[in-house]
Length: 386
Ligand code: CAA
Image (cartoon, rainbow, N blue to C red; front, side, top):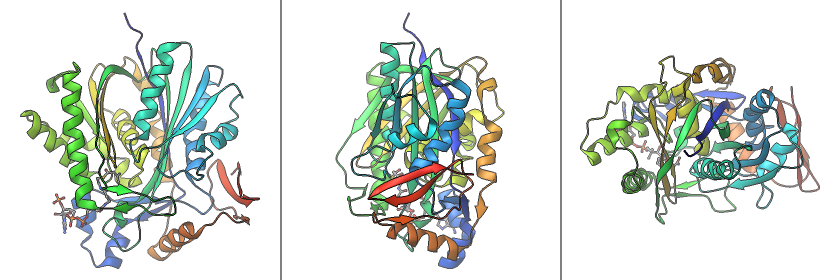
């Protein structure tokens, strides 16, 4: 029998600040229900000036290495859309901040919001080859659009770290998955742009096309019939997108799918905002952290990255998984954010977009365990924080 491989730990981290989207609605003269109900978003995380995808990733992964040690981790995979260097991977800084041993391979994966699923698949392959090894996977992003656009309320930030190993404690991933690639200009970010370029309507339809394409491939590869799947976690650029996706899949398969069961998967993302590569894993974390017992249930995970790549993955929740959750810590990372008003958020947004690669020091503001200290000799510097 093939070794079961999957996820043994999930840990969430997010930014120091939070913006209540009601403030943004008020400033735009928009009905707050448009964001709360129409998009399914209540808040978005906003980074302090001394936070970025490196500090978020390291903060998410720290509890994982504290719990499991580093002896068996020989690979660190970091997925991000918002990397901070054209060449050096985010993971190499994360590796140092976490104090991982030198006998680790480290790399960054990129395909918009899809990179986290690609990293998970690579990790499963590495563990299949040598089941003694563990792989640390971190999905980390800050979603950034121009202000005063339709996309502004769909920003956010967050990171999810996962430990992938044989005989996993949380979810055993099925060997079959469904994939879909198609060249679409729905959302992208040229190398000299701090904010994404997006065609909102096209991005929604490209997402739904990738979903049905990945589903059909999943079935063609021998994946489970839809009736075998108890719960669905979707990439959530805004949480209403999960409802649109679920309806599309119901229509495509001709099977009635319960929309109420999506609600627990949206609880963290409604408050984080979009976290690109991390969003799907934040949805899975929120689902497992919900008090409902899912032991033995099969869960579908749909990852979408504009440009565009989709993947439909399934897995089964393991016996005894609840003892390995971090529900209180995950909720605390959201609850402890410091609220900002609209003017402060807009000032932070402008400053982050203007941040160059010339030498500068960044004063301390975050209370996270790691911080971005500034640039010296064109090189970014990170240090332990509070
Ligand atoms: N009360 C309740 N609902 C309201 C409302 C009110 N007062 N006013 C409007 N709404 C509803 C609308 O009816 C609409 O609902 P439906 O989608 O069910 O029709 C919803 O609010 C959104 O309103 P609009 O259709 O007017 O859309 P918008 O112009 O505000 O733009 C958006 C929405 C296109 C998602 C935009 O926010 C955007 O471009 N976001 C960034 C791109 C994005 O997230 N794309 C998602 C797919 S791509 C992807 O997944 C990758 C990724 O992470 C980026």
